[in-house]
Image (tube, rainbow, N blue to C red; front, top):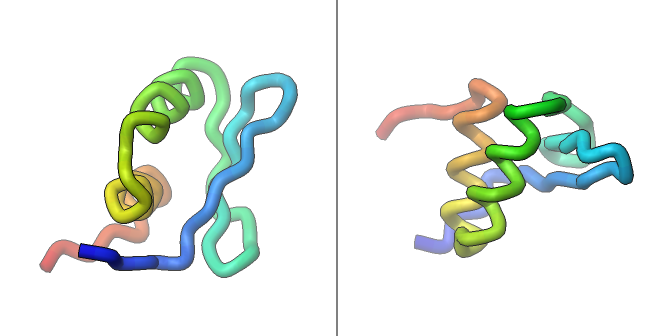
Length: 63
């Protein structure tokens, strides 16, 4: 499953995670949520990472 949902993320120097969809920041994670996200996304393939970002942002459509 090679599904690109248009999500990307950027990790700031202070540890915050900015999740974007189609170039627009839609969610910012801080603290424990950012730590958890970074730990999980580092172990995922690109399709899994897209699904994780969709869930975190609330843009998850169940099929």
